[in-house]
Image (cartoon, rainbow, N blue to C red; front, side, top):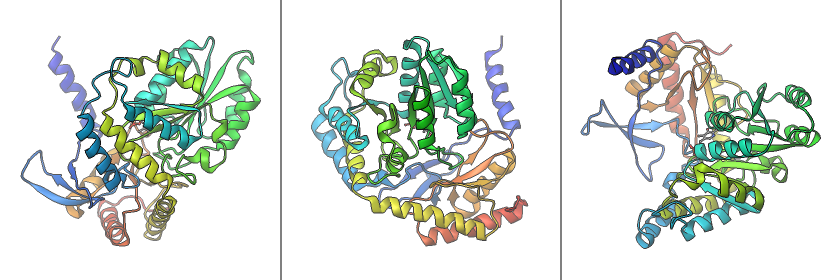
Length: 406
Ligand SMILES: *Cc1c(COP(=O)(O)O)cnc(C)c1O
């Protein structure tokens, strides 16, 4: 077999469908977010300034001076790496402090760190689903890839309910043998649609049918609730979630993932989860920076208020300009294009002509025919940046003949 030909053919397939991924090569600049520099065509010497409109650093915390200082001083005192897995010489005091900070955030007995949110989901769902005898996992149809992979690896029986649909969830739960243990897996904010799960209704159904709840708050921690613990805090159901999962890489601005819940549950995943046990722990300086940001956002609700105001303002501005912004009740501002090639072309032109960076969102991240641009205004996207964005999007929409708002 010609292996090289196989690889090349698979890439050609993606290009023909207009969904070959091209990375923007950028340099973030602390103190200037969301402005950044971008390198053209892989060249070191050609750079221009752009405005980033698609970062998941939702609050601009990647440049928080307190986090930079925590990372710098901790690297100076600990050195850079942790030097092992948590079990073999790699548990640093900074990990313990961060786990305490996260348990305090979610008002849980305990929490457990992972190298990423993706690994936290994969490890936790696969470990619980495979070890709990007869476990049935009930999963929202729009759940993130990391949850789907975790459920798949668990080999547990799986049922899918229609996205955010309580009636369908109840039908599914009703159809499962009442004697079997069950887990309902869902997210709070769905990051490609910008909608939010009916949290209380899901908890009520889980109680009624004796199910555990697994909640991915990746797109909500730091951004919702009085202290930034997420939508479960905002909706007053934090104590009804069996396993809360979050990331330190989005609103908390650093890297890493975690789960929070009871002492016994966290200890179980710590003791049996392969993705926790066999992987080296995060650098202590990273843990220190994350802790600084978690703590900062606990105490700065005004940033959350400003964040929501910016998102609402951008949606309003797009609507007034006839741009087809999708219904979103969160900080995510998705704009429908509905065609993979045009979606990429629109993004390319915004970057080339207007110095605006927004990544096209194509299949398999979203369904075919629902390709979109996904804007993420932060507290740092001021009125001037918004003026520039709306004018640029209007210009590109007109020239490419993209669909206007209905
Ligand atoms: C980004 C994301 C993850 C993974 O988190 P990382 O820390 O980036 O690995 C998990 N769930 C959802 C819904 C996400 O969007």
